[in-house]
Length: 136
Image (cartoon, rainbow, N blue to C red; front, top):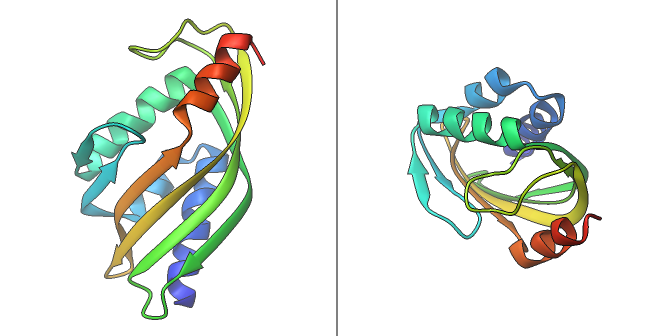
């Protein structure tokens, strides 16, 4: 359990540093990524492409991160608050002009052989749309 907690904490520390190579190194080759209210992607290279899209359109920091893990360390969950800026319009979403947003989010993880094998992300998309639409 403690190794899993440290794995997830390191994953988010790398995210907050924008250290995509370290993040990718914590993932299994066949990682499954469930995008918030979206599709399922598989593989480290698909995750790399996702990070590229995110980096292009958003600048985010996760704060107040709380990580929990099952006793056997095979599953974990995290809750956090996203503090972000919408930099460049993401496909299918509203125009971007530097809108700031703050919203709670969370993720669920499967862990296998010391690496993250699944990431399922969640945040309230309508809350984000409301904030971006108002230019918060």
